[in-house]
Length: 154
Ligand code: HEC
Image (tube, rainbow, N blue to C red; front, side, top):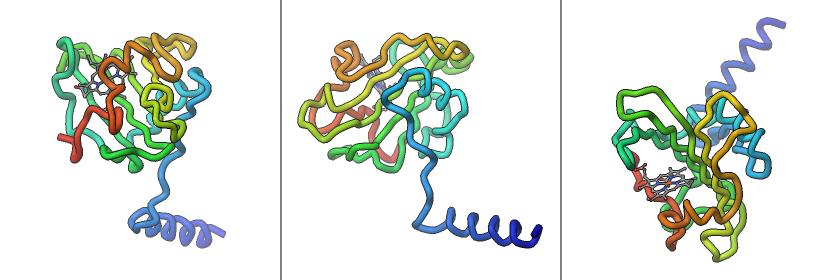
C-alpha cells in the first residue's frame, strides 16, 4: 500500500512538472467570506509572482500574483490576480486586493469581480466586494483588459 502512495506521489510530481500542470483551485467570485478563506490559505502562492514586495501606490508595498489565464491582451473567464498590500515595502502585510474575470461581456467594469480587504483576520470584513466597483474601475476599467501589471512580472 505504501508503495502505491509512493508511486502516486511520483506521478503527481511528474504531472506538475509537465505542460499539464494542474492549477490550484480558482478563487471563489460569489462569496467574499469564502474568498477571504481562500486568501488566508495562501492558495494563490503557486501563481507567477513579483519577486519581492515592491513600492506600490500611495507609499504602500505590494506583491502581485497572477494566474496562468491572465492575458494582458484580453483575459478569459477565470483569469485572476491577487495583490498583497503592505505597510510600506518593509512593513507587515495589511491587506489583499483581488480581481477575477467572471464573464465575457464587453463591459470591463461588470465582467470582473473586485475585492479588497484590510483585515487579514476577520473573514466578514472587506472594503470592496462585487462586480464593477467604481473606485477600482477608475484605474482598472480600461480596455482591452483591466490588469495593470505587465508580464513578465518584475
Ligand atoms: C489609482 C489607481 C488604482 C486604483 C483606484 C486601484 N488600483 Fe489596483 N492596481 C493599480 C496599479 C497601478 C497596479 C499595479 C501594481 C501596483 O502598483 O500596485 C494595480 C494592481 C492591482 C492588482 C494586481 C493585478 C493587476 O491588475 O496588476 C489587483 C488584484 C488590484 N490592483 C485590485 C484592485 C482593487 C480590488 C481595487 C479597488 C478596491 C483597485 N485595485 C484600485 C492601480 C489602481
